[in-house]
Length: 465
Image 1 (tube, rainbow, N blue to C red):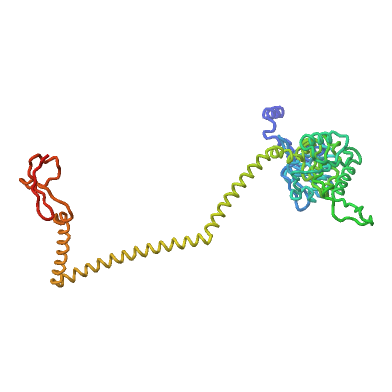
Image 2 (cartoon, rainbow, N blue to C red):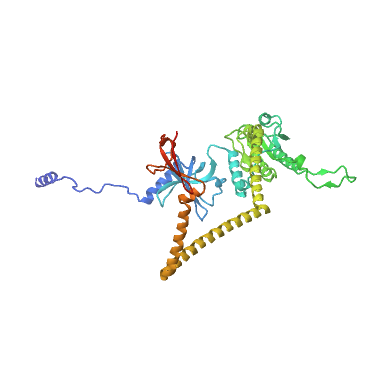
């Protein structure tokens, strides 16, 4: 009984474990978690192809290359190890769109996933485009594209070499433009295939043939010894101003002959400037990069070549008027120069110098006379001043001088007196009553008594009428 109650009591207080053991949890370290993610990525994704644009490219001294592959919404870290023999690794450059094959993994030290690159291709192109880019990089490194080696085109070409197919559309386009814009342009055709196997070799050979034609020597048939060669080049007959290498549009495969290294070398070695006009405006070939000038189309090339002559047509049409104006201006200028020379000659003539000397002598004489008169007046004034001072110093001499002056004035007064006038035969008539001198007959009346004075004596008379 007691035991029973005791067990019952125990059961009443049996609440179980108030503090149960810690629940079981799996806690991973960062390294363990990163390792699991790496294993998951490598297992679930593994080796893949991925496309995007290369950015942040950097090459380490170890030879490893690190970069980022991005698109509009995301980016992926990539690494290309130096020990990986990856073809076309030189295509990797900032901004280049590529296709990469590689293994997706995690770089545990940084906790970032990345792509270990195993293969590189240009995005959206195949083997031909890869070969194009490789050759482009190679030739650029050798300096075949250098701008400083580009030669200017002649403005007025008279003879050109044409490298193209004799049956293609390009030759028709070129000839059509040339006939319309410069019919006098001479064209030497070096026919060749521009598509298919062996076309590149024919194009290169055509360029070399035209260069040989340009510098060909001529046998002097007038000589008895036909082995004797005239050394002078036939510049007047064989000289080429430029070479046009052209064909119409087409696919990358159709235009591939102009991407061959043999064609690029032939253009680079050409002694004659080369114009490349291959395909359409959007098409670019290795030949375009090597050539001295690139035209968008065959027609555009023909227009560029004939531009100088075509632009001169208006000038040539206006040439007579321009020549007349130039001749008139030249004649006017010559006339003006002649007048200037004649004036200079007249100024330098001995007679002119003589006249100048005579005129100068007259001027000197006039100046001398003016100087003498001025000196005389000055001396006179001085003499008068001295005389005045002298007279003031001796009154008797002054009195004598005054008397002499008075006698002179008396003589002048006497010579002007009425007695002298009467002595010359004149008379003076006066009114007897009033003694007034009569000067006008109208003032005299009949019966008036008059007195007329003569040099000796007087006459008394009476007016009759």
